[in-house]
Length: 318
Image (cartoon, rainbow, N blue to C red; front, side, top):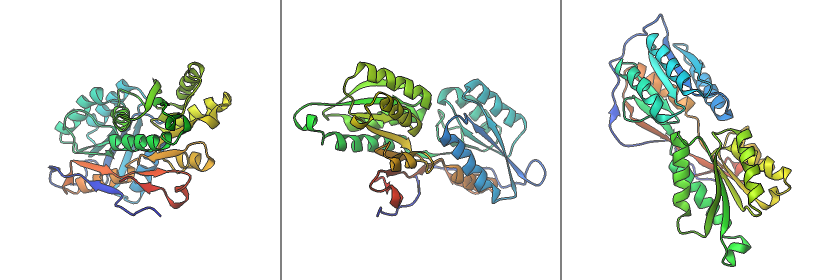
């Protein structure tokens, strides 16, 4: 049984103080603009679903959704449309940090409260950031992988383990942090990253990259993928090559209908949860719109799911 801990950790720091509570700008409802970078990933579909479910409990809210379809310029334009519409509050899950910083800052400076969700922007021109600690998740995945790899006969005999890393979009902060945390856990350990590729979070791309890795590496001990679709794509490539039983697959997201299912099916050895923050975003939006103070950063806690604990709801990361 895993130890119960709070689902959300509030980081210490300066509070973001919104303007005094006022009525909605347009009619009887507060209008919240939701800028989603894409809906091509199951995790982002789940984020929107979590936002929608939480908002439905509050008839005083109207959430308007825009999908940037993985196009940074389109997302910038859509945020500008929300600014021109003078929404009461903006939620942004950005595709990339640097290009989305100016429009987010423009909204904030127009006195539109902004909640940045999942991926950070640069600077501090926003009301609140909500997301899990990707470096911590990456480090936990690395520590788990090292523990598994050190038990391999070839490593116990003095050899070195061989890892393939399939990254998320490396111009996004989650991709950068998941890589940095994982590599920090590997320092000084008898392991080598023998192949790395940017999959841009997409399963078909991960499968193609894994095919390339298999073609040039006769031995692969473990695949660390920055999300579960990439881990699943790598598994399918290895299965097609009849090598899946020789490789350990680790992913991140831990969705009930995806990563947890893959763990139950024995396709992944571990999936590290990355909560969407959708419910928390609506909770914070309501507080802000009512004139309450919110912390500048809200850090979501995470779990790891393995065959040994998935039925019990996983295990919280320390």
